[in-house]
Image 1 (cartoon, rainbow, N blue to C red):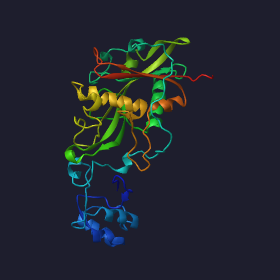
Image 2: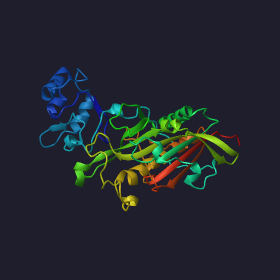
Image 3: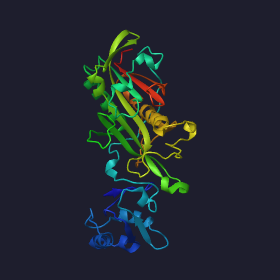
Image 4: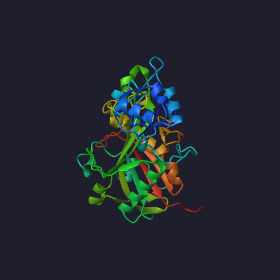
Length: 350
């Protein structure tokens, strides 16, 4: 098992349990250290020869000065970890493995494909089209030019492949404990840890979470629409999704912490009434998806190279002509603060 302490290298070796290791045990070489660790912790070790020198050095640096002891916790629980770590942690295997630092992926300028002055020009269907388990109207709609995909399934692959490549999301296909009527979902965990000594019990990292909805549209033959473009009327396949940004899923405070300056009812959202997810989490998720920012701040993986998460718009423009627009919602059955539309077309040779 490996675990991460912010600002330090990865420490690998003993599968950690709630307990205390003395500084002497940390310095013991070879099997003796492992045996001592096992006796103190009662768990298996992934390194039968004990911690290597670099790991012992890191661990010694973390030892508490008063008793020469190091506090560590096995369980992925913010309640248990409050005395030990600044915020709830999870194994490294849940983090991106192919992160590369590069150019900024923040907001890109718009492109005009569809002649659309308002959200109504995109012919969005009513919420009743979807499963009743879906609590909120989808806040992002992808329109893929029919010249790029010969079916909605093909359009779904275009969208999913591009989102996965751009943001390194983890896809999940269920079964889910609460799918909310979705076909499948994507997540990114361990983003923007909020650390505040005045609110230790509420500290948390954040998660991006998006559910895709496509089968309900196809079942009612609403997956293909004709829109006005600069070149005349064209057909597009569409896919809906619901994106939000919230307290990380493994944190006991999931999903809401009202006072959080990152995902809470604060800043520009301080005066938003009603449901926190509809009014705050949804627009934040939409912002991260499109622009790679939260509250206009570039979001980076909580990882050694601190690469940007990146939004999808700049990434899509590497391969397609892309138009995107965010419209105000919260009217009728559209119970989400804003709705974003992303139109994906074929690139033309200038």
